[in-house]
Image (tube, rainbow, N blue to C red; front, side):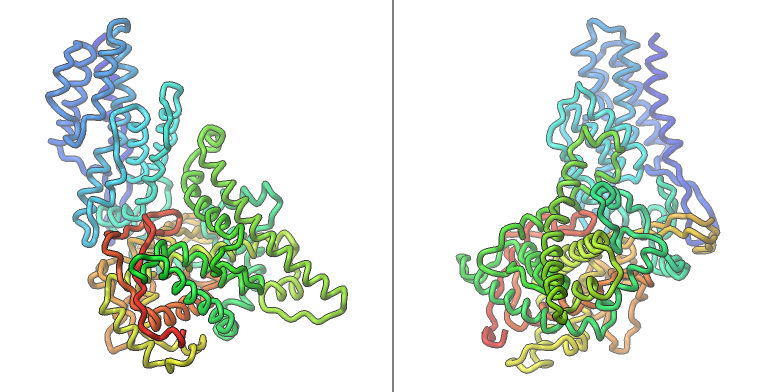
Length: 636
């Protein structure tokens, strides 16, 4: 009977090792198999010996044996299972039953790799320039049932073994587990760092557990994108579509596919994508920037030092919302006033809530939605987003209808154009405008926040930018959209920020209708490709000192510039960001004015700002900065 216990303990150790092996496509013609651990024989022997000791603990009830060999020499979590089994249940249950149940669960937890892999990733992160093992410091584990399950879930996600997550969720929601704060979902926030680790381990291209081909270099990315079809498919957007189907809302430019998407993009492009069209919004943005500068002066007054602004990221959200609303709805919302209008902060919080729960909803099975809180939070986020946008759209439609009833001419820019000159239905307008509003707020605000942070940490770059800003336009005049788009260092600052903190660290494309050859390998149609944007942005063969902020690398000063596919924050081809031109003008104008008025200095009490993955890359904590007045308030 005791042999049955040993067999139950050893099998979970051996079988997962086979499943760890995966096809890794290298830069050459060789196809190799690799495993997640890269285990040596000594390591395997040690792990096997540790499991045998666990069996002895249960079968012989010699609890002291477990102290002889901590399984991974990082913690003692996984051998807590048999100890608890002996102490609590050992008197009334046959040892072989305990072996099959507790060791089966305990060994499975270890074999899918919980603290072992987290520690390994921490070590690997420490070896990556510009990174430290502190990136994984938030992934703490304590010795109780749910945290062990949570740690194993973290290991699965961080290790790329997504399919194992379902099993661990089942374990973690058993009635015997007192579910607590769900902090294991925070582990998803560091997955973008794992992209660099995976590239170092598996090379430029490999197949992940979801059967997608992960692309990790600019050259391979270019090959995939050059094979784009007329109607490119960006991957699985089913959970975004699901809410729209529930509410009877049309799809927008991010969720629509095929010919319907193409026709929609043709209509949306006319007033956004062309440089000439986007430049017409310069005056609108300058008015918003002026109000933002006034708000910075107002916020500075409330600090003890007279120049500190707290939670700069939230202020950038207000700016971005005011700016994009001025374009889409052709009206000001008052987000930059001393008193923020009711509902504005709720809309921003809804965006944060939706994105924060997006990945968990995508990974978890549908049957878990009534058991776990993520689906409810995710839907509540979309409710807040669409409710806010629908209110603004309805108000604009009412004004348009009144003008038409009175036979008055309608002059307007974006929403007026869409409602008056296209065949979009009302539900399609709701879907498209809401998605544009969402994209225009979250992406721009986070990019500007990272830009402020990087400039505060790199005063030499800030001085160069100030020199360009102060000499390009007279101090008593506000720059136009055409002028800021002609400033090379200003544009390089934004481009370098987007390289180091790409808005979306992971993207996808599905080649639906044809076979393709990428990197010398043949792939059939309907192959899914994952673009590891974060790893590509730090490609050492493309960018010298990739972890260093160097805007100069993007200048046309006689040096060879990096491969443009090394950083594609707005995408490429017909599926590129529809609002790219507008977003660039908006960011150039506000950065010009901020640098002309203020010297940005870091808050010494803050420490390092790290990035976390919330579908988009965001700071892990509020950013506080000192805005030191340069003495040009009248020219702001």
